[in-house]
Length: 173
Ligand SMILES: [Zn+2]
Image (cartoon, rainbow, N blue to C red; front, side, top):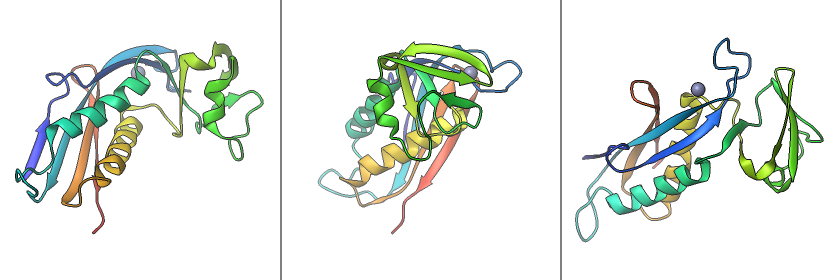
């Protein structure tokens, strides 16, 4: 059986700034009011014969939204983003948040911004495609700590109403 959660109606939302380096119009820092839809399929199980408790799905998804909310999303592994004094191959991205000011270039343009104003993501892009994959994988990992009856977790990340990407994470047996 399948359960679905509507991000607008369940308040799974976040507002963030991002940039798609090198893109004609999205190569400038701009923002979206995102919302996140979730669809999960699995066997019904446990005391209440749920597929999964809505409360858990909403709490875990909301926690990811809160991490990204009101921040500039920086996809650290983008080829056109160059962060000063940071080696993508050997340095930890967790350290970047601790930096008072982070200096970086996006497609050659220079920026300086407090580390706490950013979220540094281990992704090549902050597109809806990559964000939906990030949400699905993070949510699946968290749900797998409690549930062993799930077949897949699909997450849709929408850049406002009318456009979004869905990534389906299939669980291994
Ligand atoms: Zn955008």
